[in-house]
Image 1: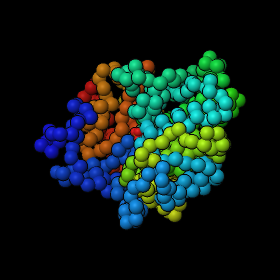
Image 2: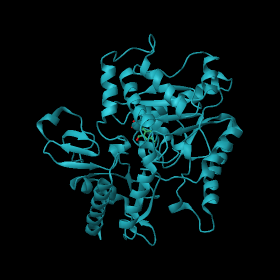
Image 3: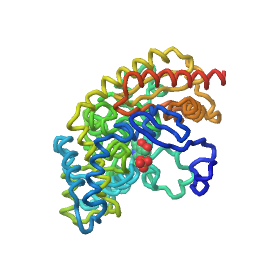
Image 4: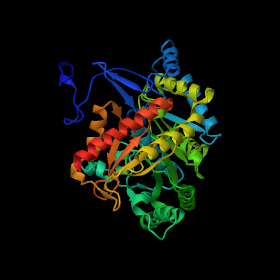
Length: 445
Ligand SMILES: Cc1ncc(COP(=O)(O)O)c(C=O)c1O
């Protein structure tokens, strides 16, 4: 530990972190001058690259007028403009947006908004919320309660009651006699079973990541899945919440991930790519129906925080909007993702320990298994995902491995590079990753 670090509360005593000196584009440089290729944008945050000039400019412009006001007294131009962009990008679906700082806060906001919606409409008995196993929605208590149970045993005594249904994960769950759609429908129908068990009239909302991120390593579903989920929610008057904190803001090739689905949510959460990490910013977007239920009811939103609608953070979001709306960057994500996925399959598809390389846009994952034929994972107590993260880092690559895709362990590697990644950087990424995997698995064999 160096002297400067002495008074910072470390996040993990076992982590070997480095002191960052600068970051630009897909590159992060430490104070020894060592260069790292950021293949996961941190945790899928630096979507537009580090220090994007248009986002910096938008923030600088706002610095010259106003940096902070309170929503009890003032609204401000950046939050109004950002809400209008989200309204337009959703073709008028999201009539109203609220802005917070983190993804977890957006999830807390959505959780409370869903409950308030039903209470205002005279259904106070709606107290249950449903989410999926193998999902991650954040680290505040409400968001953690919705997330994979393995994330929170320490805090489960504080948890909000939430029912979880199985995740969609064909690699381990799809039966030999099931088509992809049969399997997807079986997973979706688990929502109806859970609702009937709880009493559908007691359920407020179902939370789902349209393309699951850090808990399962990017697993897109076939269109019937969310279509059926939408149908079930409509049938029982339950709100559908899409958590696009990780998969939104262009990550999968469209601004909203759900644009590639046959379903739209009642409430959507975003963060990470919404400001590309330049300033913490998250959003809860919702329909006019949800908004009016509250405004024509008590007229008082139950979710408020000091920093909501922060002008400087929303200005960072406007910088992102400048890129999204006035450049063709978003339309390059699909083709770039196809190229990268192709390269990964070419280089690692036959690797004895890499399986199920999948993705959508510049959001992808792969399984790291002990035995490919039987799909046997490495023992959970070997923490292979940590080894991959550290080895990659030691060789100048930032990626996001995780674990939990099998009932015991189940290591995977998530990639979410900045959208501006070049062909040369993609090639370097693939080589560094292949080297990392070889080093970690050969050492183990
Ligand atoms: C899908 C999803 N939802 C919510 C969150 C929580 O966001 P934050 O860490 O900004 O609180 C995350 C964070 O990784 C996430 O991936």
